[in-house]
Length: 244
Image: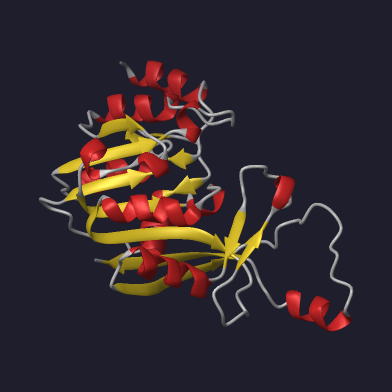
């Protein structure tokens, strides 16, 4: 494929990830590599290790794990590759071909992940997926089963001022009108769930404030003191590392 042909193919795809394909061609995505890898704490050297990227979408982190020396990388997705949303697998397929990558792909639902189906991996990336799942605890059980050593997880969190494990439920697309966002766990709940499924050590690694999501529908919290307290519960994105 010539550079001009590659540019034409890139222009036909709606990208989420900004990926450098070489020849001066960078896909016009919303997430770029330098910001993402620094934010999540991806190890600089993955030589000889196996990596599972759950919710890979266009494959930004899958290809970067391979570039950092991972011996085997498997990209897993389902909703973004073949779901009702605007994402497709076209970006991943094109990027893999353009980069000459050996990253494997599996279309699997998170709750169906198992050692028999995909194997067990030294490092598992689980980024921006948990809060989109209707059963986050069951999903984390599946994630634990395929994590051999180290999990790197990013998720939306809410109720951050609450010191007790708690989750906020967003019914009927209440979070920014997105019907695929269901949960806003607080950091204490994320840590508790990770430990409950079996991880022995959990650390909060990074936090990124985001514009406060628009909550669709009228709130039903009448007592003034509860309204004041809820305003302190800032939604944000947070990264957790966990080890078996």
